[in-house]
Length: 198
Length: 321
Image (cartoon, rainbow over the protein chains, first blue to last red):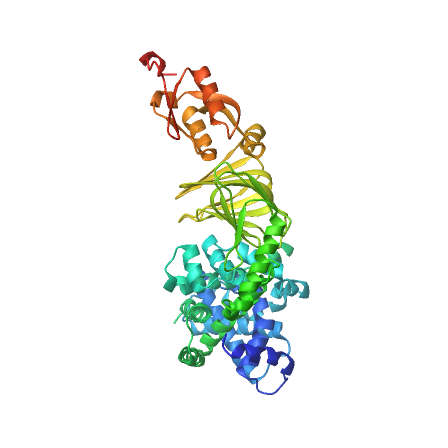
């Protein structure tokens, strides 16, 4: 781990309001307040944008805008801020005309953000919940699950993981990188728990 | 770069930092990459947050503390391991041969003809059949070879996972038998539910319910239903018996050969196709061969550790049986 991780933890108690934020404080805020909204944000984007292949770029652009704003000042109401940003981004994209517009572009101005935002009980699900983590891991393909478990539960070294999985030692970090991407999507991107409640 | 490409790059940084040698230069290179664009930073923070959350998985480790990496080879660690090993043997009693490996993986083994019950620290029990090697690590077990009957103390938050031949079986509240033969894995579900994930390109998997018999091999996964009687017969080894029902002599001999150093060799293909039924003590090849000899009119000849089985009068009229 690089030294940033310690900054993260200190940032938790030292978080100031109003003043310009350092990157690690914003990282912490972003992880705590914005990432748990990802599943609902993804639903919002999918619902309001026809071209599915744009969604991950749109999500990234929302995050960049939110993060950039937070560097200046941490938004008071993260949920409203994230969805307002998403809505503005979609409007910008339609106006620029450089992407496939959604079906009813004129309705964009009227996008009802609040209705799409989750209630507090849904947010709670998305927070640090071991069971949620477990269920995300359960949904991974076996090899992706294996590399994460071998590292995190069994604490195996790169060499030991390579042997156990029957892969070249030099490729283990790539296996882990890929598994981590799938896991992150499973953790934040898709929340069957939330959908079931709706 | 698209969001997906940036994510791939960000995840590579995390993977490399976690597993590969990581120098101050790497650190600087990472920082430079993060400072290049907010998109890089955002993608990295997102993935790193998820990765940090997985630290909590360490809670699933066994109660025995894993020695810290930098202490691995110190005298203290060796002492610790000796104590840990003693404790494990204490738990296991006079059961299968056991030893604790470097990372606290425990390995249990039975010789040919052996049969042992082991109790894991979480209260689950595993019965090992003949010629079996099982490694356990917390709620993770690897059936290196042989066969075992798992009765798992279910814990939804910590599923018990059995790996064998690259396939994996995940307990969803379960008693099941796993048999690891060369080139195929057979899972028989006795109670509850379990999930099998076959190790093939298609990523095939299935949730098994009682009576299901799943056979996973390279490239294929099949599931069929067995009757309660068949399932019970398949557990006969727990009572020290083999149960055959219209089993070919070839299959019956292969079963006996798992349990005994004396090997039945069916030298005559027409004899191999004959079928036999009944319940036999798994360690008594002599009894089985005498019964088979009488019932099927066979000829036996002992050569060293082998019992050669032939038909004394291999008449063409009989081969269509």
